Image (cartoon, rainbow, N blue to C red; front, side, top):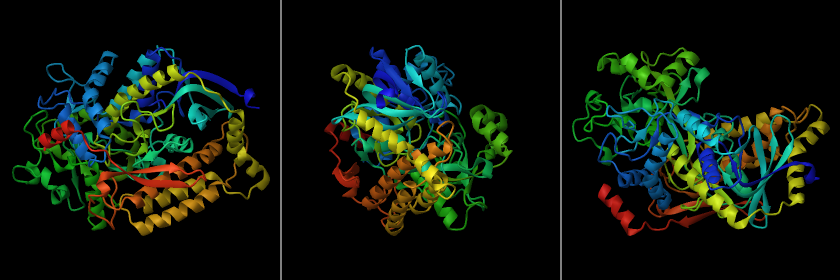
Length: 609
């Protein structure tokens, strides 16, 4: 019986221990409630540590013209105006305070000469806005939050996976999970649950995302009745390593371009000058060598076309490759070594500004970025869509279920600006924790349904039963996962067409049948095959949501590019695509009109144009 499972009781349960989860846990704990934190791997290994470039906050330390209004307008423009405008407003207004809070908690940011937090240029941001710690900003964020949070009395359950959310009527009242080492089920009772599980990158073959990113939060919330929104908007970061194989998929931070890196095709041409949107046209001549004056912190320095928004840069790279002008392994070259022509001691400058990039590629690929270009191409990086939440409270349409960070939708619209993700984590992690604690105090604990627990545990163990019956003949989970990743990469990747996505939907149906028959051998302790079998359901759910949403949006916008509908559509530009689970288990997709901007925010955008 479920009563035999070890049970933990919390007011607020946070699932995910990256920047959003840690910030939510800290805020809930500060509200005086009992907090539990579940992480799929070890504490400190969250994917947030891979965020290198910085966190966007309009502090105006490098250019005093910057303020929340400019940041808001940049975020809305980058998101192509399908953003949740309330989240974009709150984010722009609150990010500076959250950054200063991190500083007070011990974060060691790079500094200007007069001692302020240094800020760097990044794609889509009008002014230098990214507070950073070299190219290790995410690592410093996690270190700071952990050091601060460890004194708050938060109970941490490392290397645990959640298999289902538990409900009492319409309300979420906890979760059933298991310890990945020993395979023991555990019940987590909670007055409120915050989902902070990150993204879905492992649904694709080439991704910068780590093994944890299997869409768990989105899938768990969907099964609990939550709406998912804008799942078609997947960001392909333009610069992931594609060669040598030892570093394939690893991200080359946008900071490389922010510090002067340029993109060249196989002929050595800076091709980004071939396709510059009208609103980004430079004021002066576009001679490639004059397109970027290497004067760090100069307000008047011209911005290079390499720092256009990520979707635009990714499509330009794709264009060069398709036209036969790509690098030997199907990408292009990113060259920061060229600055030695302009800057004395360029190698030392690069090592100081981009230490992780330099050491990582030197050690893993014997590639010296101070001397030679990197071979890069687009890699699945981030999903703008996710669990639909209230802009102020971060609660989903399911009472008691909150979401923050990459698991939640709304802030980024059709395309996330670089650096907005880290400030997203701390702004909305704080809000999710604050309002989850408030909800838990007001509603108390719910009732755990033992039958629901037993059914979820039985389903989770089915792969072992099939393994015992099948002997050595049944299919294992790894081949299904591999086939799904290959199919999503080729049919629902950076360039999409209706006929290919229809084939993908058919393929997802067949893969779901195969996933329902996979067998696992051995026992529950230390069994990665079992973990992969359970991940499959989540991967298939988010893959279907992405594909159905992408078919529904018959236009190109931000991270969603339709070869059969290459232009924006005025009608589609006024809707969000919302996904919800039907009572019969099928997926319902609908279009929902985006609420109009309030007059004062419309005025902000007009002024910023």
